[in-house]
Image (cartoon, rainbow, N blue to C red; front, side, top):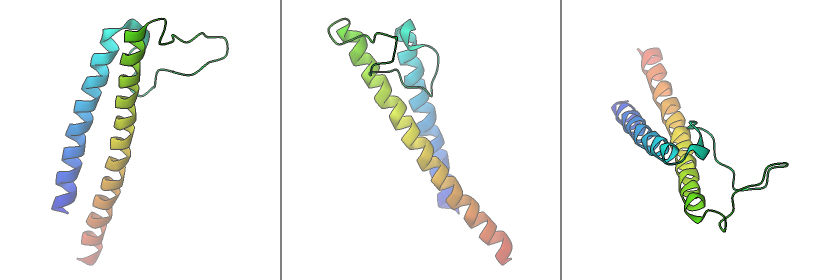
Length: 98
């Protein structure tokens, strides 16, 4: 149970670090917006022309780095969910066995 609390604390700290990077990338260009949970699109959206690598190479590369960071944040979030389920099950087993 102690391992679960420590792991959850580390995942929370890692989540804070990742979201700080996403907020940093959001501030570098207004086209990113203020959202933390949404990817910027690299694909064609009907009616909207995407910025290509030929139009603005620096922005597109920064956007891809930001999207990877958002993907890593989702991965970290789901690992945290799994660890929290592990912790809750151990707490319930401790309560029910006593």
